Structures are given as structure tokens and as C-alpha cells.
Length: 285
Ligand SMILES: N[C@H](CCC[C@H](N)C(=O)O)C(=O)O
Image (cartoon, rainbow, N blue to C red; front, side):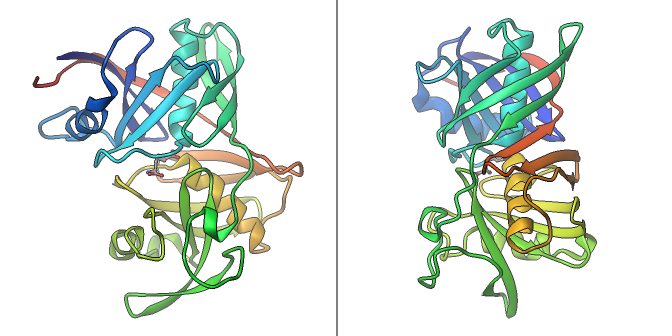
């Protein structure tokens, strides 16, 4: 099967995008195609695959598959790339529209110049803080804020936030010393997270500036994680390190995102999105 694709990235978090407005593919192939195209040696090379599709629930729909073929619920960097793609390809002829993910329907606003989308703002909706909805097992305390978390002979403090997908955030003094390689793969599969978890280490530079590294569920270390950046700002507010209603700049490996958990409860994310390449993937039938 010859599959037309577009490779795009948001701050280096790159996916292979399949446009079902212009191509038909049975969804039963999605996990295996995601695994194959993500492979840098035998495929194209990416953090996973994102399917852009028509939907009655919104102006456009998006499904995200991680490198291992697992399907995610949401993807912040993917949402910005989808917004750029549908505007530049003329699928959407507006600068303000909505996108359906498995988690929710979000609003997208694009900033364009000469027909090129240069920046995208997404209203990611409200964070989910209830332990049972993260989901995370543990005490009967409803929210998980600075909770003692024993792992690999260490005792850390975890704050758990869902942006439709689960995030475990650990604050560190210096991001360069974050035990990402050692603890990322351990915590992501920890049994206290029944659906696994995205793992973020965050250094608070100031109340309006965070340094951030991530081990993503299903993909490992990536250059950026949009939902993770949103979850980290929420965690920073919950821990009294940032303030609701203020824009917080999150420095990820691949660049910066501006996040605001505003006073009406929703989380806004603003950042870039880039188209890298277009081509055809030859999926062995
Ligand atoms: N690995 C994530 C999905 C991708 C999220 C990330 N790339 C983003 O930009 O939000 C999960 O399984 O929940």
C-alpha cells in the first residue's frame, strides 16, 4: 500500500501525518503503520504517527499513535501541526476552528503571514487533577500534589496531572541532572499508573520560566511534549511555584512554548509548527 504522508514537527517532536481527507486507509493498519514509519532504520523516522481525519464532532479530527504503535489520547505538538496543515492545505479556510482528539475537542487559533502559519495557539481545555482520572493508584487523597514517590531506591515527590493523557511531574534543582535516562523508562511503566504515564522533570527558573525534559509514554525521550508542558505549568501552580493567569515560558529541548493556566480554568498553549517533508511510504501488504 502506497501511503502519502507529511512529516511535521513541533519543537522537534516529530510525527508522520496521514491525511484522510485525501487518502483512505483502514484504521486496523494504524498501529502497525505507526510502528513501521517511526523506525529510523527501516521506515521514515519519527516519534510516531498522527492521522488527520474528517469528523462530525469538530472541524477536523486527530488521532495520535506513539512510536510503539500505542494510541495516545492527546498531543499538544501534534495539534499545532494539524492546525498548520489544514489551513495551509485549504482543508479549513478559517483562522479559528476546532479539532477533536480522543480526549476532547479543543479550539485552535492560527497566526499566518502570506498564507504560511507561523504560530498556533490551542485552548487545551481544563487539566484533570483527580487521582482516579489521571489515572494513578495510591492513597485516598483526591489530588496528587508533591506526593512521596519511592522508586529505584530513591524517594521523590510526584505531582500527577492529566491533559487527557497522564503526566507524572518531578521538580529538580537542575535540569541537567534530571535522572531522565535512568528513571524515565522505569516510571513510565510503574504499576501505580495503570495506563502507563508520560514522565517530566522540571526545573523552576522563576515563576514564569521552567526548564523541562520528558520521557514520553510509548515513544521514550522526545525533544518536546506539548501536553507535558501544559501539565508541568499546572503542576508548578499547584506547588505554589507559578501563578494562575500568568504566561509561563517552558524551555523544552526543541524550543519554547508559552503556557497559561488561566483564571477561568483552561490551559492555553502557544508555539510553532513546521512542515519537514512530503512523500509516500510503501507499506508491505
Ligand atoms: N506520548 C503521549 C502522546 C504524545 C504527546 C506529546 N507528543 C505532546 O506533544 O503532547 C501519550 O501517550 O500520552
